[in-house]
Image (tube, one colour):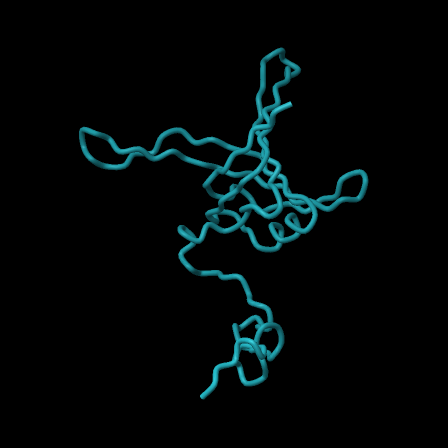
Length: 154
């Protein structure tokens, strides 16, 4: 069976909710809104089109990262497996939901092009203020580690 994959750029509708599956696997769930913008040929101005809403699920480490880093209203990019569910409501009307299972190793986080630079990922060896704590990739003098093959003479 072929699966459809999708990348969506949009904004978080509500703060992500942390949950666990019946088997104990942690995941985060949130809603994503994406609005199409097109140029009106008559006026030359951008206009908003219809808004699409998606239910997004991110599992395991990706889910923990999403739950800790995303907030309502933030711009995000999500890449994952697309699922469209259809069912009958109690009043016999048809209903449809669109879901994305975010994939690890792919994008599911702040959109760096639209986030305004207010947040950035903390580097290994930095504290919460961005100061070097001496760990990770840098030595106590704040310089990157060099191996013998990379050292320069003179």
